Image (tube, rainbow, N blue to C red):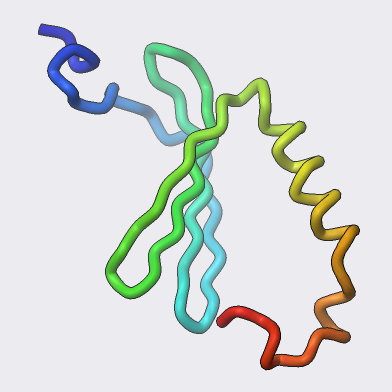
Length: 87
């Protein structure tokens, strides 16, 4: 039985890794490859819970552009009161 049919995630190879640590959360960004191709895995760990999204490699530039557009639409973080920033 294949891994996909058994409900198990395909085995992947990690090619690169980055991490961001904040006061209460850690973000993990991994460039990975499996038999279906390249992808970026973005995970958030907070309070013992972990949330993850997978972005197919061919959409990484678009994903970054959309996040950058959201950032550009918002105020400069240096001007936002700390009470409005998530920790």
